[in-house]
Image (cartoon, rainbow over all chains, first blue to last red; front, top):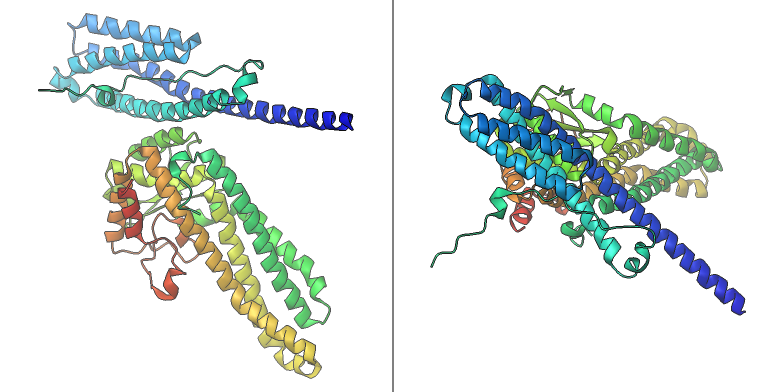
Length: 186
Length: 307
């Protein structure tokens, strides 16, 4: 009799472990797939930048520091793309965004440049790509949230680390419009 | 049940899982309807022939189900005279669709344009990998970017939730029931003279049941289809708004669509429930909205604005 009870308890535990383990694997797989979507868009952004720099250079000849900065930031972002964690990549991407802004700020001083079709196309493509990165990031962070919640809630948290599951990192980009601290005046 | 589902907590994975069950239940219900019809048709023509007719009814149900699953979207797109557009046409539409598809984590669907000035849109396909979104020229011309985003987010929610598969199957199964009932109806007239001599008491009952079924099943099937489609619209509105984080975009688009007086000429009764808003502009309020393809547009706008 005791033996039967013991077997039933062990079987129930085993089933519970299997179900939980498979659920965590599914959720982690979704995080990875979502990350691949971001990766594609980030690469696309990196590919667009050299052309943009070349186009702007042709008109704004005296702004070499701006171009150096953006080229360096791009190289750093590409390097981070090879191996770094989401957090480190986000940092590199934020630097690149800042450098890109200064390129566009320079471009605004050259009205002829604004009329060039290639420049218009490139800036449109960059805006569209950034839009896509924003949506891909939202989907990724949602999946990270689901995975981390599953990982950190009881009773999964007790044994998840035994299986080698670790919380995934969010991908946080500097969202200038949303992040500005409101000015309080007295 | 649509009001009980809180969209903020419902990921597309959950919605897709719920729709898998819905698909199974719908197929079971329609198979039962078709089997009933088949049985009584067989019984009516030859006493005891009901069971012999069952395999034929089932074969018809399975055949049309499979055909709709694999080719239904192409049939619907062709019927709507939708033209596929390449990656370098309609750049704004492509950008909006690609960005929102990334936000839902689904592949970018194929894009179609219907050359008609009435603003409207629909999505179809059997799963997100085989999905198509069709928009009218009127939609592209009359909507600004946030409104277009609202409409596309609604359609992509249908794709991500697997609503498109449910609607595809339901549309074709309703058609099959209608076809069967129609055959039955005609055969009543053709065989009336010959049957009278053989009529016994039991046969009279069978005949009454058969006639009642031929009358009622197409209506019941249509009611199921419309109830399913109405229920899905609120959910797609909500998850679409959640995706763009801007419910006013879709609300404003729906207002423009409602204000447009033109009916969409390529839409018909079978495809009307696929569109984002009723394209036929014929909403007679009889039977307490039982036959509406969509929930009232004012109610949808009200819910979006309350978000």
